[in-house]
Image (tube, rainbow, N blue to C red; front, side):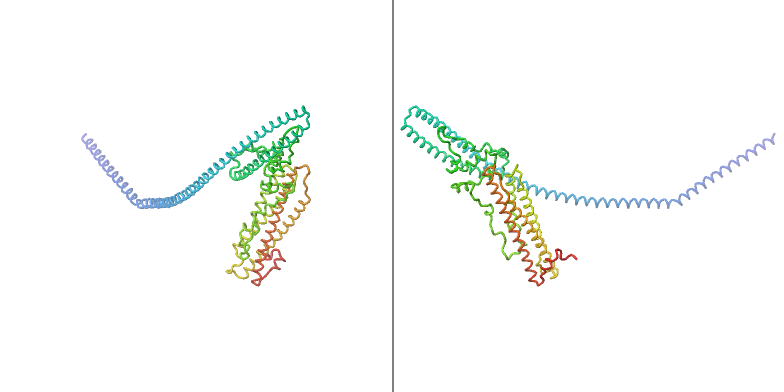
Amino acid sequence: MAAEVVVVKEIEEQSTKHVSSSSTSLKETVISYFGISLAIYLGFLPRTLESRNKALCLKLNQVEEQLKQMKSRRKEDSKANARVVEIFASHRNGWQQEEKKLLQQIETSNEEISHLRFKIQELEKSETELRNCVENLKREVDEREEMINFMSRRQEEDNDDDDDEEEEEENVEEYEEEAEEEERFADKIVEKVEVRKELEEEVGDRFYHGTAYTDGEENGEYSSNFVDFSRFDEMRISEGLDPVPEEYFMDVGSEMAYMLGRLHNNGLSRDFLPSASTVWAERGGDWQDVRCDSLESSYPKKHFAARRESPWKVDCESTGVPSKLKLLEQELLDLEKIYKGEPSKFPSLLRKQAKRYQVLVAKIDDLCRKMRTNDPCDTTLSSEFRTRRQTEFLSEAHRLKQRAIETGQKLAVLQTEFAKGNFSNDLESHVKFTKRRSLDSIRNNLKEIQRNLEVWLARIMGELEGILARDGASRVKEYYMSRYPFVQ
């Protein structure tokens, strides 16, 4: 029993020793694990820190670059904004100045409009007075007709020869008095019409399409503000006496009133009438046989500058050709109005000829502009280059002269067409007179344009040939032989 107790004690002691030894070994393994892991961590720590440092440095550089870009963009945006502000400020100043100019123009135009409206009101008042005068004259004429009819009936009842002679003398005296009154009345009407026409021309240049006039004239009719002169064709003295003929108005100096009345009846406008001064100056003869001067006489004959000035340095306006082209355009518009609704080839042919002259003038002006920019007498250039430039300009002027000659030949063909052209007999005499007058004026204007262009080109060519001859290097034969002398 005691032996068993001893054995048990030994076994317990061995177990305690084994447990203590195992616990110490476990602690050692744990300590060694932690030591190894710590060593490994400490070994890899610098590399991780370096990699992180590199990544952070890279991000820092990127952020700094973005910051620089943002600063530069901000500077550019500020500069652009300042430029935009300057532009808007300059535009605003320009707009304000333009607004001031327009306001001044509006004020001046309003003043002119008020002044012209005042004139129109005065003319309307005078027109109402004239109409009242016409009504009074009509009333007097009716009363005299009644008196004459009563006297004629009484004369028939009496059958007295002496009374017949006395009544005839009275009728003659009354007829003469009425003729004098109508003559004075027609003179007043013609004066008012002249004033009215001058005002219409002034108003037409400014506000013809305003409220001052109606659109009746565009349809070939007069506005209601004008005096109706067609009533003169319907006036008569009496059934017992001879009616007043239409030629009476022309004989006593009332041609203007008669022509206005006839034009109104035929549906024509006042543009076909000659000026009132021409009618009064030529009232002694038949107005259809009057020879009217063309409109070109109102322009100066001396168009070109002095000889000492080079022809290509002269402005195109000083040659007189552009002004005549504008006049030709206006005359063509008037001619188209005359031939409106009639099958005629004259307006189209004249329009084509005017287009040819416009193109030719533009080309000559372009040549002069080239010669002004590239002076053929420039001493800074070499003589060979200067001679070449002069010859090129001379050849171009020669081609333009040939074209001008061709245009003149076409003008001659047009003149033959004018000579062959005739007017139908069923037209009114004043319409034929207006057509002949317009065609003659256009033909004279075309002749003057042709002459001015030929003189202009001749002066340019003569000046260039003189320069070449002066330099001792004339190449006139070369540019006459070859159209393009410098093309190999």
